[in-house]
Length: 230
Image (cartoon, rainbow, N blue to C red; front, side, top):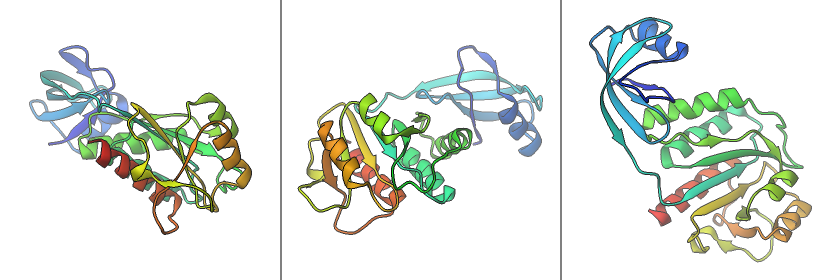
């Protein structure tokens, strides 16, 4: 069944936005009377019927509403944007499928890409939510310099490749309701960045014995937390 996104499904009759309407009517050529699913990104999947297939304001009638509870923890991945956008978008897609509640692009000293396209990333998250039928759309924060991020957020875990005392993430204390994990850029964090993080009580962790790409490390972190907390 075709799936659409509408952030507000509060009434029995509602309108899809122009982009979703065009996709439903112009691309998929859906007609009145056809059944589709609509997700609001806040845990609800609705079974609806198209009542007026207008290409700019497709009208839908609610038939059934199913609410899914949030996970009992909140996973926040702060990741340095990859040099190649497609690799960052791959991470966003897979993290949504696995389950992540919040994502922040962080700009580090070794970051080769220092500007991100928030609107494009948001579209990738919505598409992944619909494809995976995960009814919770991750929060996507605007990009932020690492220094400001460390000052603004409660401490969590920082994954880096430097020598030093680190415990595997799978053996770390993941009992908190809010878990934040910092993933560095190609070339890793600098020593000064790691020191700044640990000075702010971020805990160094390892994601394995091999050197991982940025996007792979972030997915390993997502999967590890999701698996151990499920």
